[in-house]
Image (tube, rainbow, N blue to C red):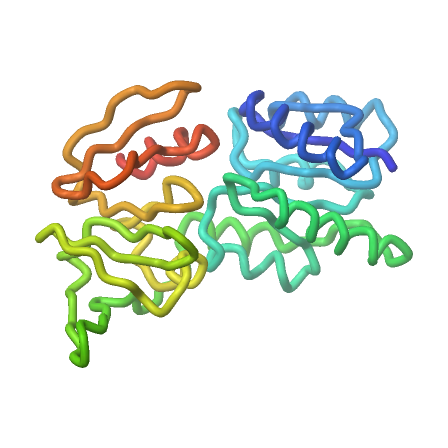
Amino acid sequence: MKVLIIEDEKPSARRLQRMLDSLNLTADTMLHSVEESIAWFQNNAHPDLIFLDIQLSDGLSFEIFETIDIQSAVIFTTAYDEYALQAFKLNSIDYLLKPIDEEDLEKAVSKYKSRIPEQKSVTLDFNDIKKLLVNPIEREYKKRFSVKVGQHLKLINIEDIECFYSENKGTYLHTSEGRNYLLDTTLEQLTDELEPQQFFRINRKFFVNIQAIKDMVSYTNSRLQIKLNSYNEQEVIVARERVKDFKTWLE
């Protein structure tokens, strides 16, 4: 099986390559831009499977498909929220949210292998998908959460929440008053419930509220450490794969 990785962040590309190696898949080639990818496809046989980042250094990767008739299966690797990617599901295309989890990667590869006998060429309505990415579907986001305090229920307004985090298989919210409350949900479910301009998932364990960020400092391995107004129970680190999107979100 021939595998191609198109990813503008070389550390992320190398990390994905190592993860694929553990699944006994070898990425024969790694490309890093729209221009480079178009030139490569014009001169090489198309691979069986492409792992493709949506936002490349010189534009959206969809521009590749608009120029080249891709005859490959595609798994998108992206930091975009799930709700903006529903169009991919309609076209039977899988995607992985960054930072990529090994278990999610294994499931996506297994899904691809189970469909090998089927037609693999990709047909997408790029205009519709671009609209979703630039102007996400308008929806109602949660304005408050109910938490259990003893035998009572307490309502906490969304603007009073500094962050959501997972710990010991539980999901918690932390308030501006310095209190932590256990929630009956998961961080994955929160992805569809939180206003994306207000909350950002900086890694697999944390969503942070932009209004609660007190300071940001450089951290090891090209990461960022976030200082929140009151939360200080553990380090809040922006994953390296999310730093670029985090900085874009801040602006």
